Image (cartoon, rainbow, N blue to C red; front, side, top):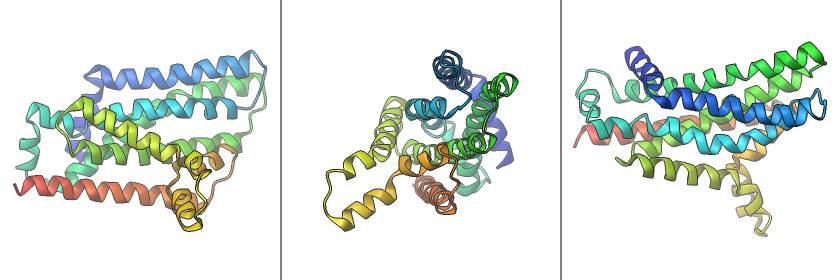
Length: 234
């Protein structure tokens, strides 16, 4: 797993994808930081976090599609499938590599926290909570994209399907407003990713929300392992 992690993590930065991902995240949060914090002289970073989250729906699939879809395209998946590494090691190595790139992007945004600390009084509790939320949200997004990546050989379709799936899951609270059936409403609210994320932005770190995100990650990682294992036995 360690070798797969190193190989995939390095491959992100041996291509434009890794640098582009980090640049997009840093630029997006930077724009909102200037608009809300600099121009409006606000010491709260909630606005920056809230307005930046939608961009993650667009850029996280870029990380996901590189994991398994590109391997199929370049035929390097055959090397992995026939290697001594188990399907679990292959999937986890790729998953943690993408998560490490995601974490690298988040680390670069700490510059905005430093700026606020130099010229204002940031609410460190809320900031920490928001970053925990972003980490969990990204982990869930990547696990979903990883599974979708295991189902298609087409990179464009991989990105498109990942984006559509993430968007639908993110917009569930809006859809639930038109649902009157209590059972269906409870199901929609449980699957809602954005509802739980908004709590983290507000400084609320709920154990149930953490468990939810971890369950989403585990569920889609297991599905991906089954998908890779199925391909292995073909």
